[in-house]
Length: 318
Image (cartoon, rainbow, N blue to C red; front, side):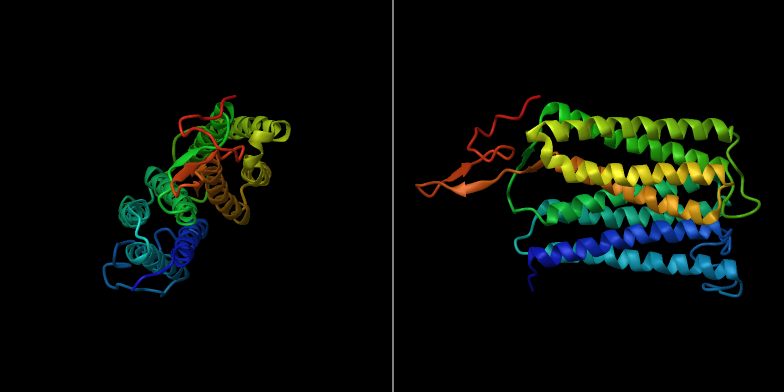
């Protein structure tokens, strides 16, 4: 049995969607105070494997069951990568990374229950989930690229520096956001320990990291507008700025309105989207080297940015 690259990409997209949904359902568990609806793992409690006798237990149980759906999705990505024609080692490795990450996150979820929702465990659970989102974006992108084509930069050095600035700023914003969450309400259980830090202080640090990253993205957007060779980043930077601005509005709104559950849930979904957008933007800065047949049947490598023939050792400069 063999499958086409198109089918493999569809399976990869399905895995990425599942990885995204489980983040939102996990947030729903926390926001409904259902984090200890099941106080054991893998059993729901000391008496039952599955228990839906209370609303909290049912919500936590549904989230655990959906973890099984996520596991099936990433396992399917692995299996399809082995029967894809042609088979590619990079896609197999990325698929296995997703499986390993899902297993690790399930075990971290167990630890989170065993330590009664300690905020460090909850933070790690979310951050690992977002790492898997980035890996899922890479898998989907590479699954749609030509086989055997090496990647090369497609924009100037200055653009690549700004792109990585956006990616690192996004990471910092997400990490500081989990600190705010660890100190604030909505711990997942009324008796869960909270981080002993000043909420206004960490919220300001989080907000500052968001604003700084948006400024870097706007500088990149200006280069995209005025520099023709930078325009290949137009869609990626526009997508990131749009999602990031929505996130900023949501963040300030939830802070000023007493952190209502629905806005927190939307903010978690936004964090997932902005992390995916950052990963996609990094990928936009490089691309497979186009290849065409030369007159004698050999391969002639062509430039990515200008479309003209160029030496494989030449990269764009700022």
